Image 1: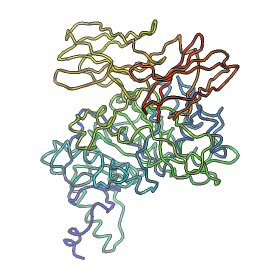
Image 2: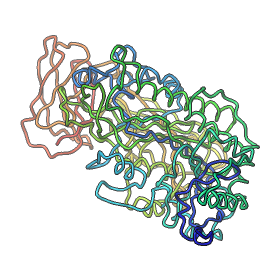
Image 3: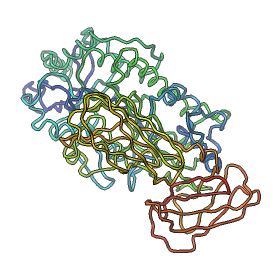
Image 4: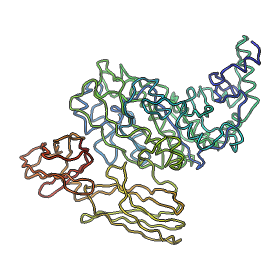
Length: 611
């Protein structure tokens, strides 16, 4: 074959090449590496995506202790003992797998947000198709040729990969440990600089070029490698950043994921302007069989994989802190689907729907986003974990709140708006908020925030949420735009339950919007009152009040709509009862309601969905 013809026909996208000896895939349609520019997302922040291949069993990763009886009925042959589940601060409902001690520490120290029940309508259970959906941001019946981050680059840099539209030579994305991901596929090319073998990174840095066989194919590949090496746009900036960077934390031995994250931390510290990094877990999470050791459910294949994940992320976050770059970096995990509620006899789990996603970093709302999944009392093989959040809501939130894309930007990336989630916290504000506090007294919440250096602020909107995910406006306070310290106060007395999340929406005169940190307030007089859950949820024409402790006496129940109007009420006498069932004997339109449960002294509330 003539070299000219080989260059014309060879698909460079599929050829593993070497730059100074390091096996990479240079994702471009031109065999001569084109210039890549400064990060397309120009606020200086970095997102690290951790892909868990095979479909992780979320129910044995984030354990719903408040659904433990249902879990026992569905998966006793793989379920962790309750006393081995790792506890999380401020909740008795949820814990982590026994081996995830590092991620437990991150959560308990305010460095993690866990988004529960992430999926999409009509999910697909094929590994290939489901992965394609997650990487492209498609609907289950939609086939896209570009990735959700690739479209972001298209939107931010029209004309890419033309070097003229890019200001410098830093890659837009770096992927380590796998083939190039379609999430970085733009309309013209793939923007990821892909390192397919993290163990040979030293060869890349030192310029070692392994010999190729003396065959026609070997000679042509050698020619392409030399051609790639003659253009230093990629290799030069990466080698320079690696040389300038360092690592301080100790990473776990024999942990490929940790090795990948170690490289990422060093490149960021060394000044590489790349905003997107993709790393891959070395193990498969496709645990159809032998998921656990039969004699010890805290060990086995799944435990090994989760241990690798936890130790790698824990070391990476310590490194970011020690290196002084933690505020610029956040990470997230994802996988193509979850596993079914009911285990199989192997013992293992089969392909299912919703997953938990972990976000780690210093700029997060440190809480559980969403609730424990609603599970049937006796699950069958076809029962699935209900979806709480569409995965595109997660993408929408990342692009809007972390990379600060506008609504117009997002419309061309995700095609439609999605509800934003309260994942991120303490983002850069156009005003200094010195403090944001609140209190609950006599059925009323008072909020106070102190500002300084106000400039070009139109107003502050107070937003409230009863689940930490979906927020609504409660009122507006005009901004005074004074440079000195100033105190603002807001009162909220339309209270339907015993705890709420609050945040301040800062509206600039230009129309730009930022958010304050999230504040969780609880009514201490009610938190220790009637401890009760409404089951099932969603409800039909009946529900059961399930008390943590037995109750005796008159129990009254009210159902309120979301503006506080009573739409139904009932009353029962309890005689040392744990559960009371109520029938809704009138027609009420489907929707979201609040159910208040009262005894003679105390009250508790819960939001429900009426079908």
